[in-house]
Length: 335
Image (cartoon, rainbow, N blue to C red; front, side, top):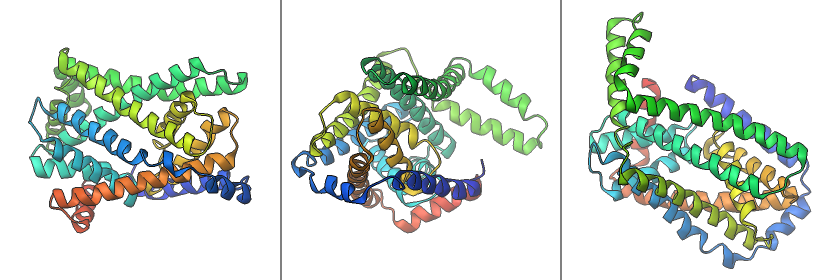
């Protein structure tokens, strides 16, 4: 999908999601739900969210280690930078900014950086798939809803499982993948074909962290820790709204948010984030007004944490908003 199409499709999806949510909202009940928040429970959310991103920094550091030892401060700062760029720039340019920032600072190559980010996303998707089945197994949904959720989960899960199968094949049989790509690009001009193979080899280097050793076990544990902490964040938010503190609701909401923000949307996942929360809460019989107020507060806190962390990271990495725009533009022209 070309980037210009994402510039149009993403905002349209966000608008449709917001319209579908807001057309059945009673504004007075929405305001009432906001007014009954207990701020005490919101206070721990900020440090916990920072901890989750910091663990992501450790995990990315572990992924890069077989090729280059990158400091945790750098990996975490670049992740904050990418998240902030996703909140400010269209078409998910934050991922490209993140890859370009790492490759510029550590001379690892943009293809290598993007491949490591893609692998990270695949494992995150698999983790969400596992969390979904655990929560679905422990929860009794209405029969019709249960069938729909199963179809959606298997559809999304199949994508991540196929992606994981490809990554595993590329890691175990890189020569086979190289020959496959070589044949697929043989009809292209020699310069383009050679460049494609060069980029592929660079990307394959990013998968060297996949080894059957203690580091891989640590990687899996870090992935689980990230999502466990983020689930606790959502659980604390339910306490702030006086909702029954059900861990199943928190982690089910986490899964639907994760699946929703994978859909093209406006910057900051506006609309699709809220839609994920509303759908998750509806499955537990919680009204739209409470769900939307919850989503607005949690989403706002995430914006605040990412914004503050992103600004600190800009300074730590010696960058500016101007350099972010230039990175995004350079990557857009190169894609």
